[in-house]
Image (cartoon, rainbow, N blue to C red; front, side, top):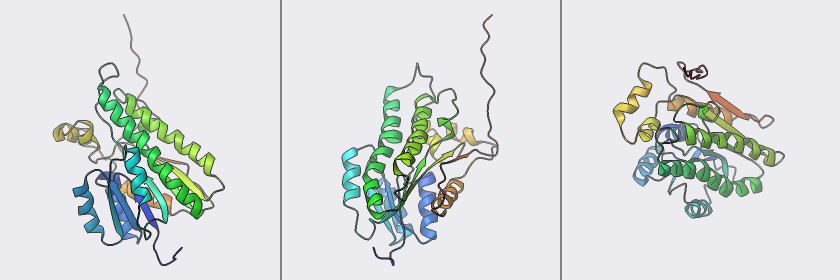
Amino acid sequence: MNNNIPKTILITGATSGFGKATAELFNEKGWQTIITGRRADRLEELAKELGEKSLPLAFDISDRRAVKSAIQNISPNFNNISVLCNNAGLALGLEGADNANLDDWDQMIDTNIKGLVYATRAILPLMVENGEGHIINLGSVAGSYPYPGGNVYGGTKAFVSQFSLNLRADLVGKGINVTSVEPGLAETEFSIVRFKGDKEKASQVYQNTRSIKAEDIAETIYWVATRPKNININKIEIMAGDQAFNPFNIVKNG
């Protein structure tokens, strides 16, 4: 290992939101960044902004073979990956389970669960061989607290939370930390994607609220990644300043 090479973080879903803010912050702190996503044009634009310490890899995180191939062929100067930030994910629709679009459900499962699993499985052998590493998974408060229309999205994020704990159980003693970062109401492209490009509808979600910003989560990820190795941050749950818990929904008949 060349000690002159800065630490490297691989960030999935780096073309916008939490992923982009995380890439920018780690780059600013002197890290090498491997940025991934489906939108090659956005990746190239971000890579130009970040400079020579950034490596863009365009592929679909839900494509198992594409994930494996991309990671196996990473340049030697970038393959000593200290941190994997599994950020790629999405929510689609807010319909009740009886009216939801099955294609939307499939896409959320493929991205939020399968994509995260594929990236993790591809990176872990490298970390185990190096004897150090950190997996940081982006979950959501939706994985702990149900809400109408959250059905499969909440289910996928509950998986992220439990998978993170089980990873930690498998990896203890191997020098690899695992953390689930679980944000609440955050103003990114999240709602634009959920409402399939309807920006006006998406903007109403955040109107007149003190919502989480992408930079807030990036700073949290950086803090987690730079803790001393004698501790492991299992989980961090973050809600917006104007977000809390609903009372139980009780339906009265008659």
